Length: 423
Image (cartoon, rainbow, N blue to C red):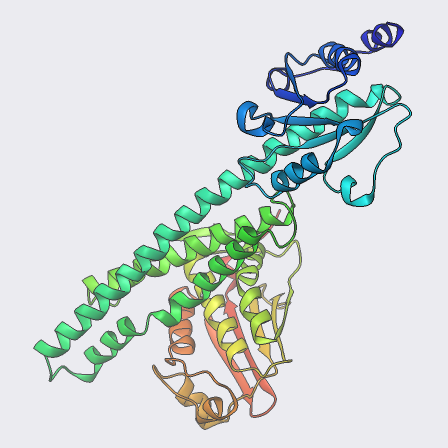
């Protein structure tokens, strides 16, 4: 009685969700159950029941399961082991109650529980322990529901991209059949449509890679803080992919050459970091060290954010593809000390190009013999010329230097009138 009065002197605040939580205590000790139930009710729990069998999870579906350590036998251990393997939506946390005078069991048995508490010695910790287990369990289930929703959205986006590519391939074949003598310029447009997988592959790899990590819970339970970052990466890659798919569909509908740019003030720092996170998986798979050097107070730009990110994506992808395993690719942001122009510099220590090869690389579908000799990549050759045209359309300058065997450096220069200074 003194213990219960002591507890009432120091009550814990309990929310309605925890108050109504289904709590099941597994024990055959009636004296213990009477005393323990009284303590749980003092904390504020209303929905408490007990069981002495192994079918408790099927019939009662508790939100928090408590075991009397003295009651644990091999049958119950097997049931607990099976409970540990249930999907998140069906699982519940398990608390072991070690009564006074009880000598706890082996380490294998201890691993079956989320927490262990002594009763009544640690009575002051019982409420906090229950709240923590209930809240963590709800958070994990919420994460699992978000993961399933995210996988559904990714599946729909992937299906849309696949459908777009199929339709474009069909349109390409029909055009070529009906117009076998089209000028070379029109043939280039058709080739662009046919080879859009070059543009789609990078965001798709980021989406699939990060979602696979989350699906397999490689970093632990879905409550791990890194999964939140991965969810953001997947979301950004999905938006980027959707933009590319829209470009492909627009290209299939019209032969207009002018781009409709959406000019806004953007954070260059955020745009670079988001793009580099999307590139990290490609670099890791290629054995390339990818680094970013840009100040936290780097100025913004008046530009089309999607085009800006697409240029960075194309250039970093090319740099990774044409750099040997073990090489380095870096992205650096600078401000011109003379006039305040913004400079974005993409460097690699890859195979490099001669002056002749560089001129070829800046033409659509240019194939570089050295690249085909020293790497296993055969791209469409769209990366550099498309990026150059995009930068110039955004009002910037595209500068490139390269040396065979030493690597390539590309500088994107955006004039002062496009720079947004941070206050």
